[in-house]
Image (cartoon, rainbow, N blue to C red; front, side, top):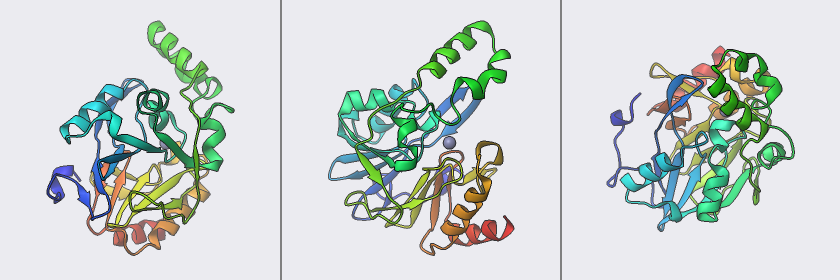
Length: 257
Ligand SMILES: [Zn+2]
């Protein structure tokens, strides 16, 4: 489902009085695969909470998307990470340095985000076979990224069921894709699902098996999400917006898996 199929609020966002929600589509290419990924901005009182930070090197794309909305990078006061993967933490250090934003994540992913442990999926061992197929220049650049993945201090821990005192959002722990994966349910009925769900060909689907090391937990997380009747729309990091009617679709997916 394209963003244009949605009905935006005045100003182009989706949301309620508390915070206005804007998907920030970033055109990306990683390992030769083009795709669009969807960080999000939650805006209230001129303060931006950014949810996820894109692939390394996309800081200017984030800045450009904010500019289109009449916002600037220095309005980012908080960064929430749905999880530790490279396409979510890619610009975290650069953004923290540029904005001084506070960083929020679930405890189970913190050691990977802070660099105490190598990211579960983005480390030299996991990439060894794929690196062999790359042209020398691309291989060198990937090796250097793998040897020193982006990292930053996490200021605040997110817990399942916590209603945040900003952005009108409730944290839902949705492990599977990573141990500390979280989703955010906005008071407006939009779910920011990270990679707990995907949209492919306009359809909302469960997590991608090849990117989800713990599918048992991943399926349990889908079943958990299906229990939230107020979910009307879902933003998937991969695939964008789905809805309205997301709750019914979630129940179907939960029954199928
Ligand atoms: Zn991921």
